[in-house]
Image (tube, rainbow over all chains, first blue to last red; front, side, top):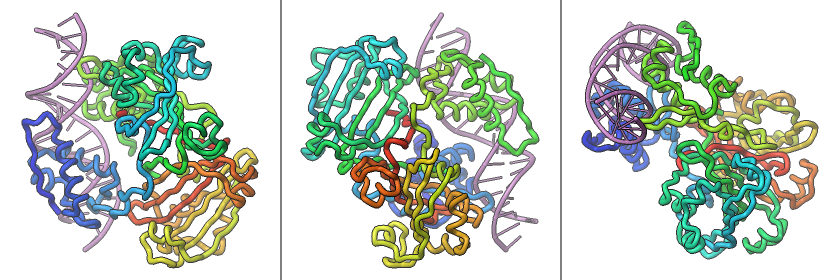
Amino acid sequence: MNPTVEIDRSSPVPLYHQLATQLRGAITAGDIPTGSFLDNELDLADAWHVSRPTARRAIAQLVDDGLLVRRRGVGTQVVSAEVRRPFTLSSLHDDLDADGRAPTTDVIDVTHAQAPAHVARELEIAPATRVLYIERARHADGRPFAIIRNWLADHAAEHLDNDSLADSLTGTGLYALLRSAGINPHRARQRLGAKAANEHEAHWLEIEPGAPLVAMHRITHDDTGRIIEVADTGYNAQLYSVEMSVAHG
Amino acid sequence: MNPTVEIDRSSPVPLYHQLATQLRGAITAGDIPTGSFLDNELDLADAWHVSRPTARRAIAQLVDDGLLVRRRGVGTQVVSAEVRRPFTLSSLHDDLDADGRAPTTDVIDVTHAQAPAHVARELEIAPATRVLYIERARHADGRPFAIIRNWLADHAAEHLDNDSLADSLTGTGLYALLRSAGINPHRARQRLGAKAANEHEAHWLEIEPGAPLVAMHRITHDDTGRIIEVADTGYNAQLYSVEMSVAHG
DNA sequence: AAGTGGTCTAGACCACCGC
DNA sequence: CGGTGGTCTAGACCACTTT
């Protein structure tokens, strides 16, 4: 199987990315049937008019996505469509995404406050340093599904317009605001668990106290490695779950 | 900063992996201080006596891990140690790992049974097909922390020794058993959420019914893309959380 | 202008698989 | 044995950042 691709060498988009995108499209569109083998790397590189390392890099991306399986001495095979079929009912896969596609948001609180001890430690600042505290409730389809608490380090908060912040947050994600302020959220470390909803959370999520929540705790860094914020989120477990692929096994 | 490394060109371990491992060690050991810059790629490749692509590949692994940050025109910098400091209380990062380091296990049930409808669908088999059902309780430090239900596709189950299976499972992980039977769990897709413990789960986890559980649902494939098993796990939320890095933001 | 990482090439040799 | 993917080399040019 040798999918035809069109590459634009004058484009700023790297060749390997153009190739990977088109190859992924051909597979998901069904042009390359499940179970079939791609041509070997030499032939593909030849047909695509790129060098073998470049072709390999494109293929490696799809292997990483789980669309292809490579075996030495055998070949490169399109794996079962089931591998990539998402779980039913699940939608949002992490909160970074969710912050980009805000349906509606209630801003519960936006204040400057002293950082709680564990937050100060995680932000790597002195205890009781001033931080920007934001609390929001997220809605989808008119139902509240998440209550989000953020503590922003001052070096990040000072680039935001504090007067219009509460208003801006009803229509835009926090990350989008940070980006337009020149701060680039880049990577985060997060912990996922479960907890019972307390009175406050139950009220805003319109559920019973004690109902199970998906609890997320996150530390976010910008593209220079600086810590931007600490976030604590509770999701209504009936409306939210996280989906992920795990490799190796 | 130019960490000294020793590479063994006769080793079957790839050079880029040897380099990445030693560089990671030098950073986590503090030999390369947080915030300092590595030498540029050309110098590193020269000092390490490898080509630049090989040096880049090693560096790329650590960037992926979040230990390094690269900026074009600037350099490669060791980022804050906080990036890699694990969250407190959290230990297991996914259940595939957990299956490898079994502390103790109670086998609750090992039977051949008809697959429930949703399991049959996920295993891509006809409804009510015979599958191997396994139910276990996992303990750590003497306390139960997880109750695990597995449904194994017949093509995987038939390679296991059914007589000794219950005994084997008390001392070994299911994945280790599958591997010794020639089946290689390779990648999985899983969904994480939360739920309230039912009577059965509460009994085995020694908690109150209604207490919050971390709920995991997983579909596992082998290295040829075939579906091996479906798993459903409930974790005591007080003893378990999942930790992960997310990129891009 | 100088220095950095980002991309790409055209080869090479090796380990593994199936015939 | 021939064919496959896995690794590695020694260059090249480019985009971006800083001086």
